[in-house]
Structure formats: structure tokens, C-alpha cells
Image 1 (spheres, one colour):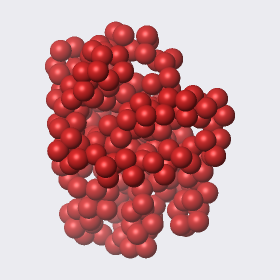
Image 2 (image 1 turned 60 degrees about the vertical axis):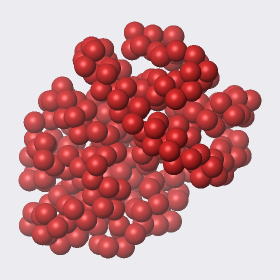
Image 3 (image 1 turned 45 degrees about the vertical axis):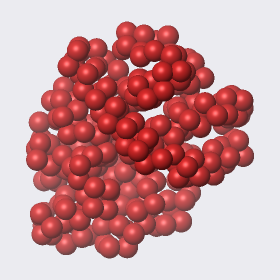
Length: 273
């Protein structure tokens, strides 16, 4: 088969980041709207106080809507706008309770001015950088490695796969966490991050750099991007992993597009064969 490339999401495959992303998002939102939610920045040591609030639980439930940092603002506004709806969603976890949020997400995002989205995006990454630089260990502790998936990536690396990271996360954060988790088999130049375009653009960059047939490129994603179907049509082998940041119904939607589902912590043998 020749050289094989595995491009994988970072959060949802390697890194469990929901607490960090929520805290950074809340603080970025507070930066543009001081009257939002807790009306002050939240520090890492306070995450346990926030963990069981409707805000964080709703944020976790709606996390699959997020593709890029500015989407976190839309999620927070959805929670702010319909607290009762979020409460009902958390109780039932039914598709019927989720559907209104799916419909409202794109509508609300289109209604928020580009300047506001840009401002939030800037504050989001500034806040993440502040947290890292103020107390790196506390920032690390907001996240945790997904060990069963890391084990599978190690196997694939030993089998000759070249591993790429395809993420909307910033490169510095990914690099620090890869070092923290001991993923020394991932080269830093193989981290395609927030400045490298959407997932389709990232795969195009990999294809051009490696100059290999598309069927030798494997993509593992943690959420069902709309671009995945098109990427698959171009010959890339595309997979959605269970246990990532996707809705339960996304597995059925993925199958309809011919996208295979990978079991968390048990995928190396599937990709090798």
C-alpha cells in the first residue's frame, strides 16, 4: 500500500477538553459582555464549582455544534436565550428537545455581527494563552488525555503511519499537550491548526505535501463536519469516532454518507487492514 497517513482530530480523539473550552469561552464572553453568566472571569481552581451548573452541562450537550472558536459564543448565547429549553434537554436528552437548538444555531450565528464574532475569537485565544502562561499546570489539569485512543495511535505509528493533527485548536496548545501526553511520534510540523483553514483545506495541504494517493490517507474526526462527505468522495478514507464530540444521531447520518464508525480505543486493527 506504500506510505500511509493518518490525520486525526485533537480534541475528542486525543484530548478531553470540555472543561477548558467552557472556562475559556465563558471568560472570553465575559470580556465582551461583563453581564454574562457569572459576571466575572472564572479561574481553573473554580471549575469544580461550575462543573454541575446548567451552563457547563448545557455547553457539554451542545458541544457538537462547534467547529471553530467563535461557535462557542453562539452556544453560550443559545444557553442564555433558552435556559428552560436547556434544562428540558438535559432531563430528556431527546432528539425532539435538541432539534430547536440545531435549527437556531445557524440562524443565531448569521445574526451575530462579524465584528462581534471576530472580537470573541480574539479574546478566546488571548484567554487561553493567559491561562497557560499564568499557571501551566492548572491549565493542563483542566484537560485529560484519552488514553485508549492514544494507545491506538502508538500502534499505528509503529506500523508506519505518519500522524497528522487536524484541529481548530491553536498550535501552541496542541504542542504543549502532545509533549505532556508523551506523543513524541507526532512531529510538530504535522500539526495543522486554526490558521490552516477548514478540514477540507487541511486535507488538501496534507495531500499536496505527501504526494500520495488519496486512498492512503485516513481521516479520523470527532464531529460530523459537513465537509466529510465531500472529502470522502475525493478518495480519502473517512471515519467518525465514537465517544468524540458528536450527537448520538450523527452516527446514523455518517453511515448514510458512507462514513465508517470507529470504536473508541479499538481502531488500529481496522485502519491497518
